[in-house]
Image (cartoon, rainbow, N blue to C red; front, side, top):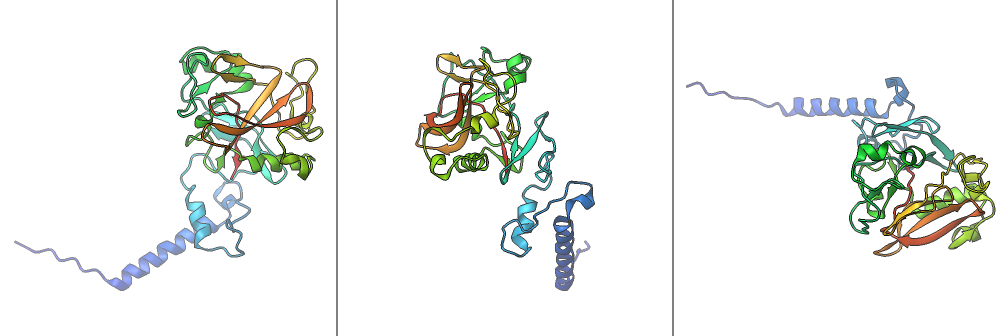
Length: 277
């Protein structure tokens, strides 16, 4: 019997590990347009003035994703078979249309939950995702989500997330809402809703200017008794919960130039947007 002996040279091991580290640094800290992708303009991801290990780890966290987190805002962002328009508002990059992610679908009348993910298409009463996606309301307004659904992994692409209440406030400030008004509840601001509403589709000549590029559509909402307010009002979740059963959301109306901020039951089905990390 022949014994097989494998010798390991510690110096060679260290050398190979060092080479591997240098390779990773070159790959991940080189501007991505050299690799045929859109440039990653801020390689100092933690803002400490140095490009170091934490910056490399930040980029490694999205390596291998099919959806690049490093698009230039204004480019198309693909996610789950749909291509979303994007827009810069203030310091952030937003989806310029409502989310359409629909892994399952529920009837608003028969189901309502604040703890398990629920997905609805306005006016659709059934459980067939393909049929729900074939409706005109899905095409026009996307999906209505309860709060649990917007907090599910994968609802937004890698490198994106559901905006927090402070991130919504940042949008409103960028559109001219005052610092004093932005923290209030109820109707606030001046003409921010008009700037955000789409130029068609709102009831009673309530179309906006869409000067912000947000392109808000009046998708209404769902609750335990069915669906309400399509073509007249739109509701959008933030990811900021007020307590165990309520969360902060925004409402835009055909008849109101201001933006409504309020706490709503997590069981309601509202529209959602994504914002870049």
